[in-house]
Length: 177
Image (cartoon, rainbow, N blue to C red):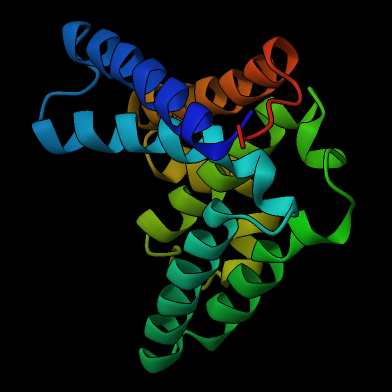
């Protein structure tokens, strides 16, 4: 499937996840609803970062900006780690590890752990590397995974799964003409 199909299906699924989160009281601001929808759409595009594509160009442009901000603010260790992790989709062929079902819960969990570590401001005396190697401590310091991050994790997992499901439904859709 082409990126537009993944983007549309991810956004639609994100709207559903965001609606459930809003109606259940897990997302109570419009910003949270938009972030949940956006995360689902972004993760519907994530598996195709392993091939030269429009989503890949968008991702690495944004990543370059984030890395510049981190370096400029003196967070060079965080920038190095994030830069290294952002290269992981490129180490395998297209439809490699990014298109495996085992990656659906694991990649969003890794993002969630990083998010919680950055959100927590990294506890005093703990480096980013220590926080990542002890994610349970970070998540406990943040008040627990389920209460704070569940709707965001659900959005990431849903978007990722929507991508893999849509590839199975329309695996090799080619452009007309």
